[in-house]
Length: 210
Image (tube, rainbow, N blue to C red; front, side, top):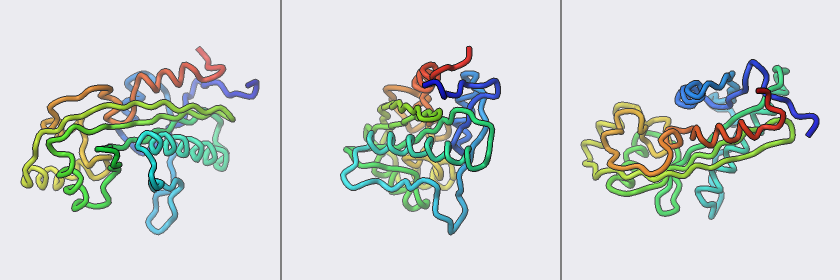
């Protein structure tokens, strides 16, 4: 434990492109710098997000968050960046054990929303924080009830593009809020970064400076 790096004044690295996660970290006063992965067409992604056969939604998001934090740590070292803890997260939507990630295209987005419409589903977000050989993962699970949606409502929403990069093909903080009749759990977790769990991980970080 003696080789742990405390959170310096410059903060942590956030291994995510999500503007929502950036906003949420800023909301709780955490200083961060972005640590981005490769996402070029034709290149193999830094993290394979394929679901393993028979993998449960909770196990999947926890594995993804851990993999992203570990990959971010390696990228930090490869780029000779000043060392600091690396935070990563992963969000997925699940209905009856079936995992719905980000839609590959808008046809798939319409299919996802049609499957979720009128039903109660889970939104799971796992957060991982890595510092040297120390890593911890926290999981937030919430329930969301969507109202029944017509084909026209789904088509109009998908055409807006808001759900293109979101698990479950919708964003609760945007236009899709009018489709949500009830939530149980963490609103920030549904957005993509559960602030309570994130704060708990940061508080447990060894040798964190105060």
